[in-house]
Amino acid sequence: MRLPTGRFCNIVLGGIWLTLATLPLGAIVRWNEAKDQIYVTGSAIWVYDSNIFTNSEGVSDSIIRGSIGAEYRRQAGLIGVNADLSIAIAQFTENEDEGFSNPNMRLEFTKDSGRTTGTLAFSGNRASRADPAANMRTDSWNYGADFRVKYPISDRHSFSGGYDWQRQDYENNQFLVDLNSHSMSADWFYVFSEERDLFSGYRLRLSDTSAGSKFADHSVSAGVAGRLIRGLNGTARMGYQIRKDLVGVADTFLGFNATITGTWNLTRQISLTARFSKDLSVTSTNISAPSKAQRRTSWESCSTASPRVELNTIQITDTIVAPKNITAPRLKPPTTVNCVVSSA
Image (cartoon, rainbow, N blue to C red):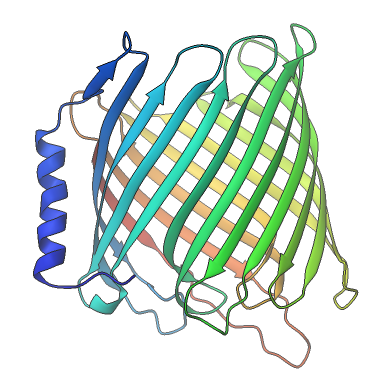
């Protein structure tokens, strides 16, 4: 559903700003000896995007985004319950037709005590974003379910496993393909020291599209969590991946994948966070992409006494392998600057 422009959008976004300024921090409703709590959350964001359609034309625009929602938390007994409901609204300065209002829902059951711990979650949301494969902005409904479990074998060794299902259903666009994916993973963790954990694992991901394409991705990886180097904390995982076409049309892809996140605390209130990811993917145009890299750098103010402020730069580079008779698009990597003020 497209957002009506003009006075309605200004009223809603103004209401979000007013909510952030007047709501107290912490739970606003508590009962059952504070075992059940309800929070109201909100955020207001100004964004400058140098390429809102991720195409060669490089159309830029500034965007005002706001979100408001409620969170329910229950911590009583063996199983905890977390439920989130929110709506995100955006207004573009020049390209007003690209404005949107997107709902987001998530229900999660947690087990944090006992020898075996884990989570079971279900989610659904509507997303509006720039698609670098289609060179346009797209709207889609996304649904998901994930199950995670962790079991300690000894003081230093532990095992974790998980299953993840996701579906992406594009809205009002007959040229894009919907995607289903199922992922199963298993990881072994080893406490190397007080500052670092080592881990290794295997992941199987099955993907199928509404156009009839089917793929199986096998990935073996290893990494470290905690202190990466002196002064830099985070998680680094690197591995090798094989993609097989289950229909037998495309070739088998081989390549490396990686996910690296590191944070450097400059002061107690200012930190620098950098993220890099590279993985195989199936694009919305039903093209198998053997390389998708995203680099993100974030300057963040983390003061508890004042609103949170972030400055982000994001660059996405997609290498798309197309059939021999089709020329893969040359993309201009988008750069986005975010200024975030939030209250939770």
